[in-house]
Length: 189
Image (cartoon, rainbow, N blue to C red; front, side, top):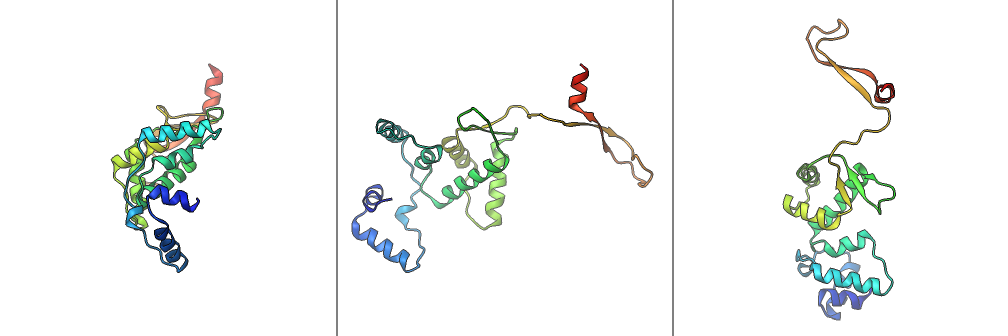
């Protein structure tokens, strides 16, 4: 990013930028209060920026648009990164759908709990469940949660047996035993 653009974005003068650059070159890592204000751009301003980009022949990626919508705080940026990694890990990229990602049926609150546990584990601050849901919907509108579980390929059906299939165990435990692949069942019909 050019220095002048940085100055305009944060409404600071050249001397402030020079001071920050000097501190960084000396190895200081300090989050400036003015860069941690939790503000984000308004929807109307984002729309104007998107129209301006389109008028100039620029097509912004989903990540670039998301960056306009993220609140300006380390915990929000960390959450955005966590969601990005989570969606890449557990999401299904849908071909011919302009970058849509589908997740198996799960509540956003359950995903937030996983995120919160991860942040607690690495001793990082986390955002609230409401902020998490807002960040998800604003920055990852292309990620959809399936209404039903997707079942494809050779999936085995299982039957519960009320007792062990061998005499190695004295206790009665419910055991799973494969019946046959779903594809064979559906071929018979």
